[in-house]
Structure formats: C-alpha cells, structure tokens
Length: 439
Ligand code: AMO
Image 1: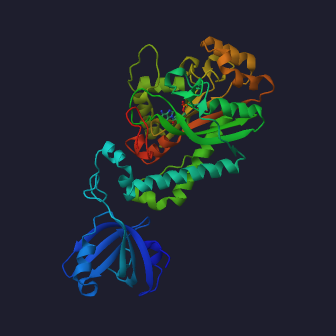
Image 2: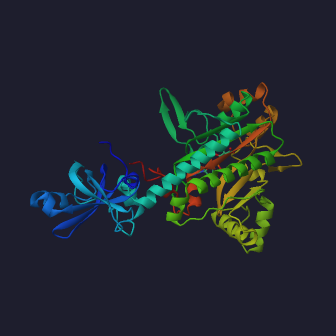
Image 3: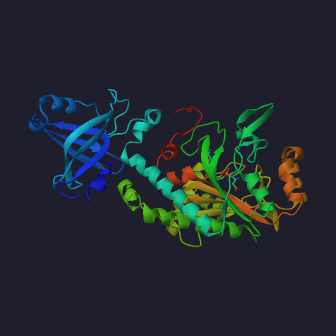
C-alpha cells in the first residue's frame, strides 16, 4: 500500500484502509487504551491503540517507543469529531522505521523555545516545529514570486562564479580562498559579472545566489553568507527605471506570498503590506533634515546608521502609513566603495544610488552604473583602485556598453522583515556568521 499524508486521509471513506507515517510526537497512555499523536509534513493525526485488540506485550512495546521516532501505521481510517482532522486511525500494524535516541537534545513540542544557538546546533529538530517550517515555506513562495516576476518581464536567470579574482564591494569584507597557485576570493556580489552581461547584450538578467561578506561583528541583520537577489537591465533612462522595476518586483512578490501563503501567514500572525505605486522617495539630504527635526544629533559625517534608519522607518509609517520608502541621491562620498555608481550630472557630489527601506531596515541597494569607460577609470583612480585588478571587467566597457543599472536585495533580510523575525538567522536554514561554521 502506498503511504499517504494525514491531510489526504481526510478524503477516505469511513473504515477504509490506509498507510500513514511520520514522527511520534506524543503518547497518552490511559491503561487499556492509548492515543498516539503522529506528525507528518502536513499535520498531526491520531492513532488509537486498544490493549484488548493488540495484546498486552505489543501494547507496551508501542507506548514505549521513544518520542520523535519515525513510525509507519497501516490501519483503518475511522471518522470522529474528537480530532481536528475529523478522523483517527485504528492500527492493523505499526512499524518502527527508525527509533529516536533518548533524551532529545531539543524539545520539539515545548511551548517555550530554547536559546537560538542551541536551536541552530540541533536545527533538524528545531525545523520539525511547524512555526519554523512556515518560515521556509513562505521563503519558498517569496523566491517563486520573484522568479515569476522576472520571467514575465523578460529577465534571463544567470549563474555567475562565486570564486573570483576581484571584489566588488570593497576589500575589507573579502574572504580569501586558496585557488591552486593563485589567491582568490569568495564573491561579495555578482555585480561585476551582471554588468559584463550588459555588454554581452543580454539586456535583462537576474541571479538568486549566495554572496559572501567577512563582516567582522555579529548583528541581527548580517551574516557571512547570504542570498543575494540581483537584477541588471540595459538601455535605461535613469535610476527611476530601476526603482520602478524594483517596486513592481517587490509588490508582485509580496502579493504572490499573500495569495499562496495565507495559511502560514495566519499561523505566524503576520499581515503583509503589498506596497502601492509609486513607493515614496526621500532624498538622502531630505532624510537628514527629517532626522534633525526628530532630534537626532550628528557627528561631522552624517551617515544614516541603524538607529536613524529605524527612526526614518517609524516616521514614514506614522506619516504615510507604509513600511516602504526609498532613500535616493546618496552622496558620492558615502558610496565610495561603489566605484561603479553613476553620479548626478548636475551635481557630481551626488550619485544616482538609492536604498529601498522596509520596516526601518535597508533591503535593497542599487542605482544606475557608470557605463562610460573613461569616467569609470577616473572614479576608480579617485579611490585608489588599480586598473589591472579589474582588467576583465573594464574590457567589457571598451567595446560598446549600453546605459544600465540594477539592484541587490538581501533575500534573508526580506524574509526577516516580512515576518518580523527578531534575527536574520531565523530566516536561514544553516546560517554562517563569525562564530558559526556548522552544521
Ligand atoms: P549591498 O552591499 O548594499 O549592495 O547589498 C545589497 C543587499 O544585500 C543585503 N546584504 C546582506 N544581508 C545579510 N548579510 C549581509 N552581510 C549583507 N550584506 C548585504 C542587504 C543589502 O541591501 N552590488 C550591490 C548591489 C547593486 O548595486 O546592484 C550590493 O551588493 O539587504
């Protein structure tokens, strides 16, 4: 007989035979009768064990199976209004597929969560909890919604190397790799490759892949490995085109999650905002003014730090009733690592770069790129980058490069913010950070 899920058994006739399997979550032994709660991917079903039917020895064997063992039950589905699924199973046979050791390093049905490090050390058990799996089902929908959007808009999904010779986002956060006789790095971003593909004439590309940053401190919104969603598009008239595409992408993606993840969202008690067009834009200068009005004190070199971002997020929520807004026109000096940023024609102290903020935290950063070879070289010189280190990249600009731009979006952060998770690690199956390399 083929094994079916607990939710499929709902549709069987009363008394029909079935085979179900899962993890033994709980045993309630009342002496002559015992109730087993067994969990599969879809739900928790109940098995009723009657001593008179099984015999004393078998009854004892079964009620003593350790919790979280995997068991397989063949039996009769019997309708009842005593369980949530509307049936229980009267077993003909119960097989232990794999017995769990005792004690468990982490409780699966405990009401209160253990500390995050303990949970991450035992992630396979942690993920058996429904609320944890909901996060990854919604993450899956987020990715599905993005792919759906990109494909509708004529973007090609690409895969670029993760072992690279040159970094794109500044030397400080590069991981080194021994690569045969050479020194290589883990890619911080697909930035340089997605730009090269614009010269190749692909026009619209996107990638969803890991990016690596040797962040030297632990925060609730940074990890050393994260999934970067990047797109790049050509023949644009300015960074407005990139912001529009980003807004449509975020809206489409969130409505996809809302439409298909209703059950999980309800279980996690989350309400999603799908942002309307156009998403509010505030210049970097305008943000500083708002922050000054709000009483934030500045040092000599005003950067919008984590605290300021939060203040701005609250301000926008209060005054404009939305979780989303763009910070535009980042000053050139604040984007010095992004040598590839195009500057504003009317004021080269400003870039065409923007961030998209979501619930008071940066989610996206992007803008229009400098596509003119000579200007690009000048910008690299200004911050002391060596041309020969970027030879392969620069070559693509010499033989016909269209105007272009794009963004990078942190997928894990998107999940974190969307579901109001207290730590980005909750949104990652097996996070990597300054103190975690396993499991
Ligand atoms: P940036 O460095 O701002 O831009 O990164 C883009 C987005 O990636 C996410 N992010 C991170 N998430 C988790 N842990 C980290 N350590 C981490 N670092 C970044 C953030 C951020 O907004 N090449 C440009 C993008 C572009 O211009 O196309 C870039 O990588 O959500």
